[in-house]
Amino acid sequence: MWVFLVHCNLRQFHRIVLCLYVLWPPMLSQKRNPDDGDGSADGDNPDDKRRKFCFMSVVRDAISLQSMQQLLEPVIRKVVREEVELALGKYITNVQRNDENDAKEIYSSGPRCFQLKFVTDISLPVFTGSRIEGRDSSNLMVALVDTLTGEVVGAGPQSSAKVEIVVLEGDFEGGGDNYTVEEFRNNIVREREGKKPLLTGETLVSLKDGIGLVGEISFTDNSSWTRSRRFRLGARITDDNDGTRILEAKTASFVVRDHRGELYKKHHPPTLQDEVWRLQKISKDGAYHKRLSQAKIETVQDFLTHLYVQPSRLRNILGPGMSTKMWEATIEHAQTCVLDKKIYVYKPHDLEQKSGVVFNVVGRVMGLLSDYQLMLTTWLSLHTNTGKKWTPLMMKLLL
Image 1 (tube, one colour):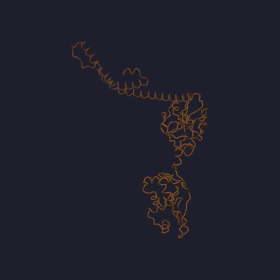
Image 2: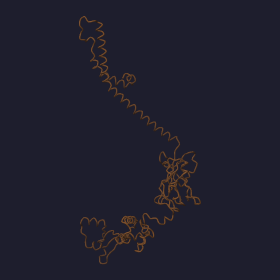
Image 3: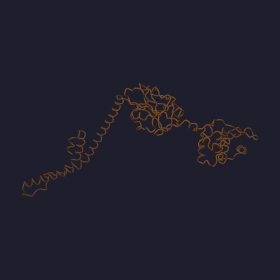
């Protein structure tokens, strides 16, 4: 305890002295004055009195010191804890401030680190001989970004560098974005012996303000012969960067199929003019395709018209060989077809010209025309569910 009093600072010392000032008088009052004894009998030996007094004084001092320690210990502990917490808080604040200053100093004075990135994803599926595009038929885009800020590097010599597009092994992970130049180079895929270059077209891209659009490129071979049966596209800087490390880019892995497969691929979404075998679960020249052709159902539009006008007949044409799950998958794919906005009105001859049935291009009923007012099927369904009675004219139009 006394060691702590020696080493404490002035503010801590004042706090402890205040505590002693408050606590010490009661303890002093507990001490007995040597002259306050019970009085000794006449004839006692003075030496015995002195020895007795010294012994009792030592006992009283020991008891007083122990009492004082019990009273002071929690106070001193509280003071020490508060001072330690305050000093620790100041230390952490200084460390954080120093770290921020060091980071700013490194960013401002240290070498900058750049990375190439593919901004757009590749549109799938990919076939040999077909142009490699981004999603929504857009051009693939490569950007040079600063790894510290994540922003495109729009100025400086690197922002106008030349970039080479290469083919990589599909299983090249490279620890995410942590790989060396040698690892990237070792995973570049070359063409098979006796074959054309694996990637043809505009494989060199010039960056402008840190961004480059990939031109028309395509594969000459499928990916089935590689160790992962998949490819990736990679991008690397070809210019000398004065020792600046620019991390290469790579896309997600994908499969490249032969071009002949494209002739039979399904369309997503299909169009009205697509042949009916473009729908899911209907193979070209397969059993279902032949049955539909015999029933004069040649296009997706024909299929949808039968689906809305004669669904039972269409189901019977496909036969029991098509399971319910296959039937639902085919219908779901067909209904993704984008329809034009044309509508048609059917007016029976025995009814007034101001009334009729409104339907779309594939025969789906959109509503009723009554007294030149269009009532959509949603409105009709709502009022049917609420118990509203239909007029005889409405019933006759729908039958």
